[in-house]
Image (cartoon, rainbow, N blue to C red):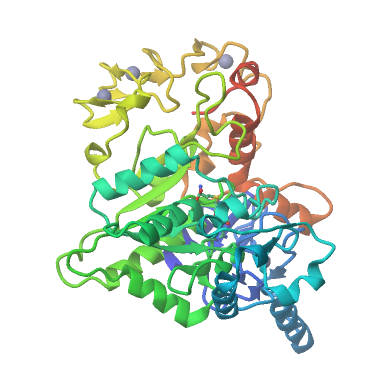
Length: 505
Ligand code: SAH
Ligand code: ZN
Ligand code: ZN
Ligand code: ZN
Ligand code: ZN
């Protein structure tokens, strides 16, 4: 933790901007657990002002928690905050929900209702209270096994950004996990993978894989026991269920002789990479702590599912990871899934610390093995003799630029003014276009110094409403890349994207 904090502080200092210091002991809590510490620096000053903000919500509408680190908080305010946090917890405990579920499954089909407005399984004596709400009836066992289909995906809320795997991708992940010999899956923010595993486990006798879901979406506690689901915040490694939930996770990670554990995570793409990385490191440490002897020098096998343009950020925190070419598709996402008219390219990839050579990608979808790179690559990814690697990141065939001494996107040309490759329609550096990431002139996003540090350093807005603005800017930090890039990928068709300025790496 301390090391993280120092790294980020160093990155933020002097440049004038915002940086994440991370989770620190003694941080105040919002309803989403301990807040994260950030620092706001102003130009020329050595030390910035530190403040706490909510770890989970990128929108102040979702959680308005804010506190300067050096702020004196009165007893009255502390008490009010505690009360507020308490009143912003789910109305039912997990235990209560498990009890409700037991009663629910005893009901005949005709009495099994699900309130769509409250996103809740209803027991008959509750019907009255929900009489004006829309509900689904005759909830079958099959429906109970697929809560992700029953529940409304929280996609419009920035906080949750639930994008569910397309069946094909989910099946691919599970097949891969099985073929690699894993029997336990720590599903961090992957409810659909979890439910596919749980569903098979309950139906197929010789299916040996088990899963534990860690997710901030408490609605899932209606469908899973305390051994199957933990209410968890992956931005601050916070278990809402306290020590008992922590222990559940620890136990799950403790592998018996012939049990192998893998962590699979698909965080919201707007998430602060370093906060996620710090939590994953803690989960990995939990796994390590439960190991006896022979695994001491190993890292918990992991699949981190994230867009390809975060590659350098992820590798910064996990140098042992590499990015696979497999394009992860989603159900409820305009562009992250196959369109009717041929393949739309999803920018989402699997990052893993397993050897790339063992991650076999489906030949039916055009992936092939590159013997030189010793990994499976997409059909359009050709091996470049000069780079001596399969260089494409987005699935299209890239071309080598001798002047840049690297492969670049097919749509790029070498610009002599900029001395690098870019879209033909790009505006050259000499026109005063600031860097996309930090806003400063003189360089582009790809060479932005702040991206090469271990912290998220961003130029703070010079606006009046400092507090709000600071936070807003900050929360767009990683999202800045994400919103403009990921969302662009998400919303526009390829034809439209082409016309836009394309500066992804
Ligand atoms: N593709 C996955 C879902 C990924 S969407 C699947 O189909 O299984 C991101 C997931 O992360 C959602 O389930 C969301 O509820 C969860 N999530 C969002 N913010 C979180 C947080 N702070 N802590 C833990 N989980 C979070
Ligand atoms: Zn919060
Ligand atoms: Zn190759
Ligand atoms: Zn090349
Ligand atoms: Zn140029």
